[in-house]
Image 1 (cartoon, protein in one colour):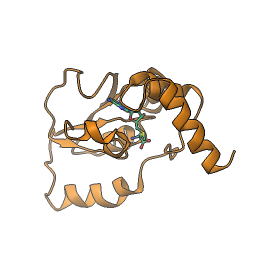
Image 2 (image 1 turned 135 degrees about the vertical axis):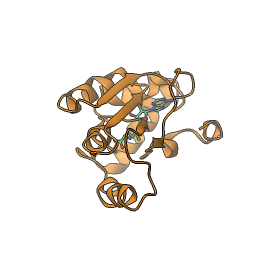
Image 3 (image 1 turned 135 degrees about the horizontal axis):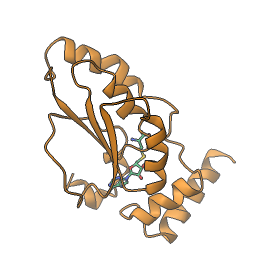
Length: 147
Ligand SMILES: C[S@@+](CC[C@H](N)C(=O)[O-])C[C@H]1O[C@@H](n2cnc3c(N)ncnc32)[C@H](O)[C@@H]1O
C-alpha cells in the first residue's frame, strides 16, 4: 500500500471510529496494523539527547520518575528504564492493543510499567520528567491546550 493510500485509510478508519480524540479511533488503527509512526525501536532523540541531559545536570539524577504519554509499543519506555539514574518509567496509552504490545517490549525492564488509559482522564502520580514523542502532535488541535 502506498503512503497516500495508507494515510487515506487511517483517516477514514479514524473518522468512522470516533476520531483522534477517541480511544476507539486509535484502537481501530492498532487493530489494523496501521501504525506507520512505529519505529520498531526507541527514537534517536533519546539516544542522542537524553544521556547528555542527565550527564550535564539538565535532568534530575537519582530516583527520578519518568512518564511517557501515548507510549505506543513502549520502545522509549524500555530505553529510558535502562538509564541507571532514572530507571522508574511509566508509559500510558489509550489503546489496549498498544498496551498489549508494550507489555512484551518492557518484559525485561524491571523499572518499566505501562498502563492503559486516557491521558486526559486517567489518574496519574507526579513525575520528574515527561518524554513525549509524537503524542502531542497526534492529538486533535482542540485537545492540545489540555496537554
Ligand atoms: C502517533 S502514536 C505514537 C506512539 C509512540 N509514542 C511512538 O512514537 O511509537 C500516538 C499514540 O498515542 C495514543 N493516544 C492517543 N490519544 C491518547 C490519549 N488521549 N491518551 C493516551 N494515549 C493516547 C495512541 O493510541 C497512539 O499509540
